[in-house]
Every structure is written in C-alpha cells, then in structure tokens.
Image 1 (cartoon, rainbow, N blue to C red):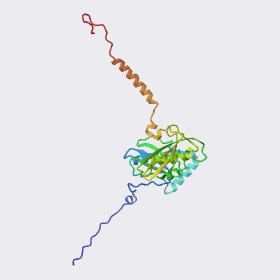
Image 2 (tube, rainbow, N blue to C red; image 1 turned 30 degrees about the vertical axis):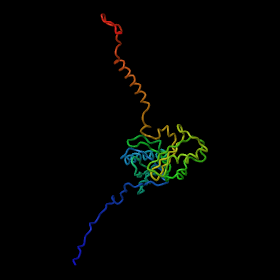
Image 3 (cartoon, helix red, strand yellow; image 1 turned 120 degrees about the horizontal axis):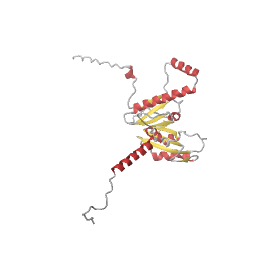
Image 4 (tube, rainbow, N blue to C red; image 1 turned 45 degrees about the horizontal axis):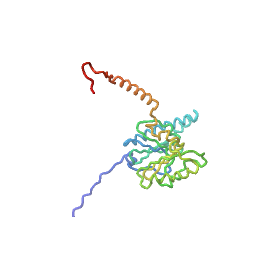
Length: 266
C-alpha cells in the first residue's frame, strides 16, 4: 500500500498590526461609561468621532493651562515625558449603527462641562453629552442619578429616541422617568431649564442632562452655529430688490378713452 504523501501546510505569518487590529462590526459600549453620543451622515462615523476627539483634547489642554501656573505646567510636561504610555482621555467606540458614533471620555471628565465649548465642524450633526450609559431597561434608566436630591425646584423636559431596540418603548420610558421628578420639579416642554436626554440603541442607553436644550437648538450643531443675525438683513435687501424689479416690470395703465372714430366696446 502506497504511503500517502505528506501534505505540507503553508505557514501563515501575521504582523503585529494584524494581530492587534480592532475587530470590525463589534459593539464596544457597555454600561457605566461617560462620553458623547454623536449623530452624523452615513459613512462619516469615524471621521466625525476623530474631529470631536481633536476638539475635546484641544479644549481639555487649554483648561489645564488656565488652571495651573507655569511651574505646575513644566512639572506636568516632565511627568508626561517620563511616562512610557499616556492614557487617552477620549476614545472612539464602535456602535455598529449607521450615522451614530460614540466617544468615551475619562471618568475624571464631565461631558456636560465640555459641550459648551464644542464648535461647528464638517461631519457632526448632533452632539449629546452622556453622563452615564446603562442597559436598555426601564429600571436601569430610572436609576441613573441626574439631578441631586437637594437640588432646588426647577423645570424639566424629556427628549427620548429609541433605535434598534425592540424591548424598549418610548411610551413606557416617559412616565417611569418623569415620576420621580414630578414630585418636586415642574414639566415645561418649551422652555425647560433642564432636559433629560435618553438615546436608546440596541442593548444600551446613553443618558444625559442638558441645560437650555431647546435654546441650544437641541444640540444640532449645524443649526446652532448658523448666523441668524445676517439672515434678516439679506431678506430685507432681497425684498427691496424684488420690489424695485416689480415696479420696473409693472405695465403702464392704458387710457380708458377710445381712439377717435372707434366706438367704445360695450
């Protein structure tokens, strides 16, 4: 009986980049995180998260410079040079959902404090500070502590969006979340001082507390950073121009008297 020829398998070699490459289409969020819930155009999720991180890091660095003196700044720079790996304050996490990105921030950072410094940029549509993430369950959402128990009476509203989350309904969230606040605070849907923003997607919820949410155009950056002051001027100028053109194009009134020799039409 003839011996079977030994089949030599080809060796597979992996570079370090391939070995530690981040797996695609993996939902990376988990409860008890802080960060920013971001919406953008389809296909722009990575670029959007990268832009937001750049802006957040720039603002975080400027706050550190203002807070400390020259000696503390030098000491901090020396410490950073000595440390081999500096932990990142902000990191992009995959959501596996089109048009949605999430930027996780360090536990020492409060997302609500940095939201006011974010400016408009190319890819981001809405930017919601997530004070905490929790599982997509009513009990977990209600358990998220947003306002302090000794907070003074104020007005509040709810802004809720549910995406790809079959086990959670918007109509069930509203009464459960509003009940603890109704005892002390007042509902105001138009001019609420604080708005509880709940973004539910897949198995997770991003919960945040935003001050003057409606005045900030629901944190829609493209709308928020338009220049409304220039629009009335442009509109008034356009109206004047249109009025002048209308006067020029207006036909002259013809005389009602009929020419001589021609009878008037009855």
